[in-house]
Length: 280
Image (cartoon, rainbow, N blue to C red):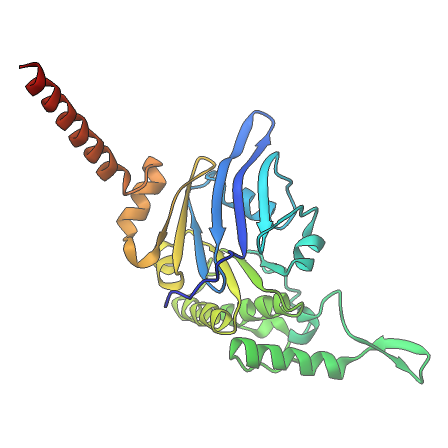
């Protein structure tokens, strides 16, 4: 994936955010930023804080300390409605699709357009709903699906497209994808990768949470590694390997840390040698 150009002000900035659940510190002084029109991967072992961070960004959890800024302005996100108002949409792992409903009905679930029959009786405007569903899928995700198709007949990749399409109904700037390739076939994974590419090409900024490191490397511009509630480092994807990421996930140390330590040791040895020479 080609790294996108960023504006001076990041889309989202998280600074020193902390979150505790009783005695458990789920997030510890988390600081990171999401650049405009980039795809950022979020990785870490179970319990690293990925889900808590995402839920904090969409208002399900409130931070105990720290600040979240959106387009440079401090914000308080009191719930998912606030997140949507700010232009943040989330596609969760379970997709939450209703198999018995059509593609269009799932995309507009809970917010179907309404028209009045004879100017009096309100009813769902299915024509508009179908047209908008087809347009969003075609223009924003480059996928052609019959909006009347029952969702139960769709492939895994097509179901993911419908879930992402539903998120795009509100025209968000930022799309959060939680484990978008979980339990999908290889063909469906490639389909999702194309969907992410289409999102970026259409100007969206994307955060992806994923356990599959090969897939996260193929889809992202940068990768943030979490360890025990803190961000170990955020690096350009083309600068790291899978082994680098695994090392950071396991050790909680940036891949640059050993070099820093070695450099400090060399500097210290130089100072010691200089002192000994002066003494002599």
